Image (cartoon, rainbow, N blue to C red; front, side):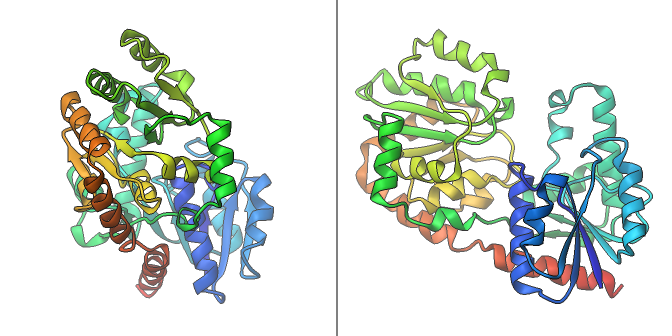
Length: 370
């Protein structure tokens, strides 16, 4: 049996986390199946380290490009592949074998303004349509995403399997005191702070978070800081303008990208983690914060209540006052912080990459068995 997996997004955020954990755990639980991974040339060395039953094929076609529509099917034919797993929503029409596709969310349909033009929107919608209708099985990461897929694409519900994500193992490792002090000194973390970490896009609702932080500081919490971690901050000048509008330039800090070990420490040092997103297919950052022992505030919509359960304060993300009130409660109530911390540890334990990947592997067998 020969299974191919599209691993071109191995180094990305979001889908990259999914791909890395999928491959890591397949390597642990399945030493017999031959896996062929389509990846960027610079990632071939990483693939070979997974085990003797993993082989890399350098694929120059960029994700979401016209060339992938031809090159991927050619690769599948040349390699004699029995099943192809596309871990994002692109499944080329000429795919010559059985297939499984993972659709993490329908964000390009919910927020088409993120795409550069109408042609890109048409490409995304047609790719999602083909993936849902022509694949043998559709995997998704939450019941909320499953509802979206059923809403936009009329496919049999039994064709869609919900398999939850989990956190990377690194967030379960306790940083050493030396690592914590190094991060504290490097970033001059001398005051209590609330933290946001994730992508920097409009649906993450960060302008409203900044407004809520302004409201929070009008009381007796003027010493609290807000840290925002995420790449591509420079693309969204509206965030900087919001900071200056509320005269918060000394109190809101933008860190951009930080290494994983640094992020793990920043989670642990935060008084609260705030994630007021308007839409998530799954939403890993709240779980990462919980695994780090940090109380979480997040939205009461999309997949987020499903992910955090009773282990977070849920707020209306469209209400800045509600976000501010939740931050105030956590900052001032040590008993609440302790309760949320313990609930968070229990909640995180309910998610497991090993269990999830075992289910993915079972679906491979089901599809190949017809």
